[in-house]
Image 1: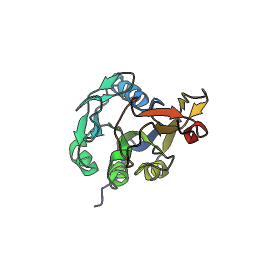
Image 2: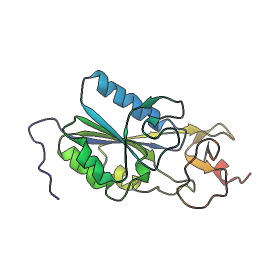
Image 3: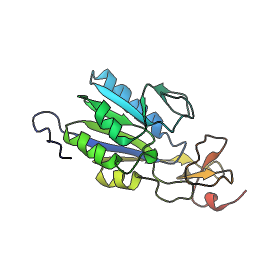
Image 4: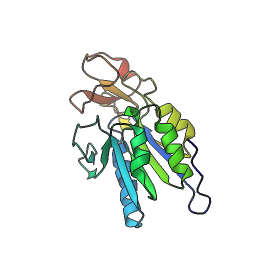
Length: 188
């Protein structure tokens, strides 16, 4: 589907905030969206319906800061619900389907600033979901790091503490902890 670019108004853009769990991605997304609110810009915020760890509707950081969002089953729904806003925020982008990149491109062509947060790697250190594609089309990228709970160095791996199978296992500190690439190799 072709979207007519917005050549009269503001220029759209795609910003990606990425990193491991506990690096502050959602916190940074919430911070940017609060600034959008202060600027009296219109916005919509979305998260995948699968993410119900802290709240069914709100986006909630590990530090318990939150902002209201709309849970959606597919990325195409974002196009339908975004309307005529200035900014669209999207959390946990790694859980969205293969169309999330196209959705973000279409929003940016409408002149919308798109701010996306998500895990760039899974618990094995491999690229996660559609995040590599989003990073490739991003105008701006912010990579955040946590602190390794084993050695205190910069952490970039979301180490899974359980033997649960599958790439997607929702959890918090009970299942995951931030580790550097060396400490992630330690099985303890």
